[in-house]
Length: 397
Image (cartoon, rainbow, N blue to C red):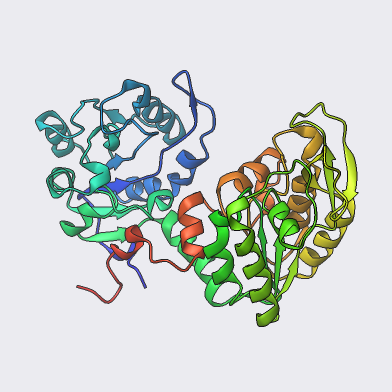
């Protein structure tokens, strides 16, 4: 068991918090603030318990240079609105200097400040101890609440933990609880739904889940690689050509473990990769040479939806089709609706799946939506995430 922010005395202490404020931006305007809102529970707890709160995060990929396109100033402003109080923000290219240290020391209980983008420093992604020391010098306690970067061993996620007592924030606690329960103590039947383009990207996840699930459902672009492994012609559909053998391996492993593996029975096809291209539905073994698969078909939606209705634990990672195009979004939307109607444990594994349930207005119907695409995938692979491993255990001094 990992310590959380509730297991440590924070009153009057300078508390350094790693958040994941890597939000989408357009012309320095935040276009979607889910990740900021996800951090509010921990930040408000710290404020209410009279901590001096020093927040840090990355944004985008400034490649270790102070590129103001990636400044966290808009985040500080948005966070201030959401908290209903000022968030002090000092933008310096070195992230931490004497001015920043002085500001941190002068915080009153319940005050909040935000550092500049930690990836303005080249040392951050290399986990170099000097920058870790500089960050740690600002706090007396370190709270990691950035699940989205928990799979990265960086200064602000792992390095700082070598210098300060380290606990989890509420977001990381929730992520580990839901994803951990799905892997270790799932309510049965347990279904995993895997979509997305490439088999290679999800092979480790599927191999690990095959040890635990009752049903593995395949959709999205990777389905056509499974079609190819079955000997079907796929026309102009996307193909992960280097990993056809991996698809064969997954099908064989599922059979050996007694896991029911479902691939689409039919697929919605188009001649061009365009929302305006004419749609035609074909069975999985009948895709014409001049057509490409864009979405799962109506027969498949019905089969998958019935399986989902019977499940008690569902993990979904990856869309069923090109859901960004309205004419090819039905498969992803119907699967999202099936999950929304399920009364069991429904876990959305971040990334495109999370974007899809948000788009269809179904986010509040899911039990848990992960804030970390890459991190949730690695967790589901069974990997130890460095940012989680660095948090103090409940029985440690």
